[in-house]
Image (spheres, rainbow, N blue to C red):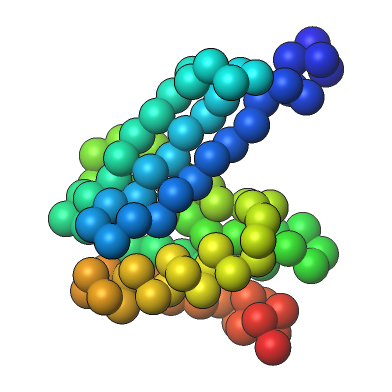
Length: 101
């Protein structure tokens, strides 16, 4: 069971007009979704664990997408820029703001 979880990778791409989230088993896609700005309710930025940042994208229909432990760390800054450009509401918790500094 543990070997299967080691082979699963997550891919998140921010384009100008959509967000693409993909779950891969080795290099084969298990799940892929493209989210357009009109499908997003809001984005929540939270602290996860002790010192990790996380973003939770709430979609109008479907599952909430968790963006945690992605590299590089500027993925959160790019997500804020995307939200500002597309007019998507977002908020940051107090703990997230402390980590951001």
